Amino acid sequence: MFQLILILISGGSYVYEYFIKTKKSITGGIDMKGNSDTYPEIVILSNGKKQVRYNILETIKEDMIGESRLSYDFDYVEIEGEVTRDKIIIAIISNIYLKDDEVALINNEMANPGTLEYKEYQLFRTKTKEIADEVIKLVG
Image 1 (cartoon, rainbow, N blue to C red):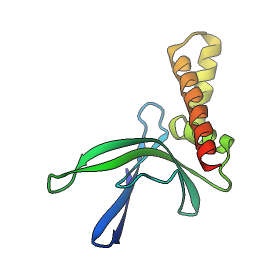
Image 2 (tube, rainbow, N blue to C red):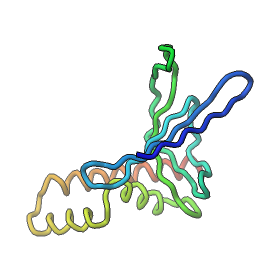
Image 3 (cartoon, rainbow, N blue to C red):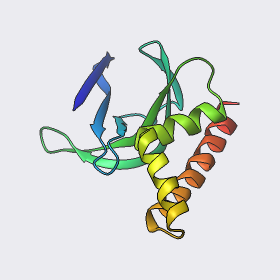
Image 4 (cartoon, helix red, strand yellow):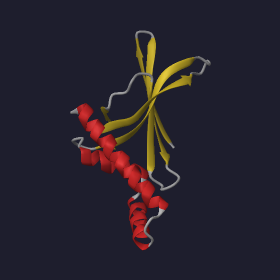
């Protein structure tokens, strides 16, 4: 697991974001998640790449002294160069499915049509395209 913590001190208050990359147990892909005390920007520059954030959910977290605070959990992908719909789709899918896993899913479906894994994969692809469309609409 890789964790990066960014702490910004401003006017006596703090804002932080953290990013975690964890192995996705099903396929071996990388599932990248983050959290922020403020509503996160959709696209930011991070480590020379553009970080595209999606699935942003408002949550209540408990801090180290037991007080509740509002925060936002999100998934993200990193994209080199211009952020396009196709790059977002490819990045999200490759974060979850390794290429070998995708080939295996397709071959298994061709050999034995109607597999549950392939149906789940197709639903995931559809949702990914919806996410990419929404991000492109928001960032113009």
